[in-house]
Length: 539
Image (cartoon, rainbow, N blue to C red):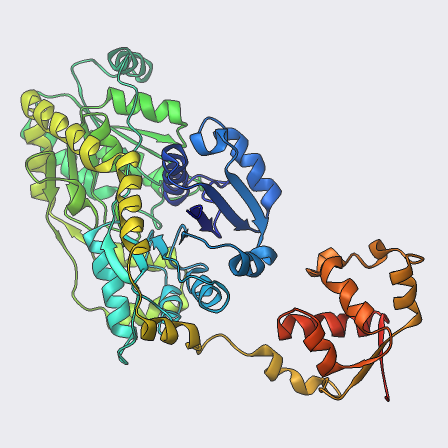
């Protein structure tokens, strides 16, 4: 039985500023490598040694403990596709490299293995042209995009519908949710008391917690949250309520940091702003909280990992009825969804978006997303005044996470889907269509730039070994001088070519003698001519 080999062009583990995409990718890969469903894992990345260093941080994972991971440069991809029968290729997003891999697989791999990826943000303006790359005949029944919510699936369908009016086959679409790490439950009461003491928040106060990127233009407008809290406080004057707003921030000059405290003071609200919490801080804030709130209004959201994290801590959630939140929150069971209203069509803003930064465009669109403030305040007042309802919803949320939204469950869903795709029978006519599909956006650069040169090699060109080539074969001139490996060449292929040319041979005859793909063969010959190992002459 052949070994199963996982392939990716994305590292999944990344350094740099932490955001939701990086966290989701790292958690997904950690769960996959711990479950360890494949015999080996091949990653073709820009910096293999850097990725290998990152793997040391995850050495406890099962696949890493048995040394099943390999990192290669992207230059190695085509030769590996030709020599290794990969089981599945999974990328960390459907924008970067997805189409490129499909083109390479169809041409160089002996098997049309499944090609899959999950979505993250779908709202960047450049994604319109990125999805246009999908419009060609090279897709098969084993290619799939996993959409992390029903809302995301709807968006991708709209992309495909708007861009594809010619009846091409396209990848399958399936809802495959992301997940959350389940926190350590031992000591949560102690952690709750400690952080409340540190923040000087009374034990009987109702603590509402928002966690997300702190940016007035790039994530969520927090002002409706304060306005709803003000109404709720007026409805329940005997309840002490505190709001903690926390999350990653890279801009201390953002107006949010001046406007939010000012508005909170004018509304007589207790609001704490805690930027850039580390994992320990986040854990403590979740433990200290009574209600998690997230009135998202930004189209960057397609899922909502923080809601799943809140459920993992047995917190009830009040969230906008928005995007992937609809999949996560069971209304009136695990939390409350607050109605939202948006315009159906925005041709002027859509045109403006082509001339502005994505975050500015997202902000303007977010300002056209109305969250029902009275309904929001009613939800806060209801949960704040009913501890048994909070407990019941939090318990139901925790059970929902364990069943559907743990990273182990998420990876198992992907493995089940991969198994179905791997066992999909591809008809001969479909394989032929995929193999011979010419992607319209992959330019034939060889032909485009062919007129730059004086001419090209022909079958009748006569090639013979140069004096330098003779020295190389005799060992009087070192192979290392040419650094052939940097060019993707090997001595194993180069030496026979030079031997066959010792007594002179035509280009056509030499090609027959060498067991190389015709394009690779020509690349070797031209490199040898370029470096004076061969010379062209009259017979």
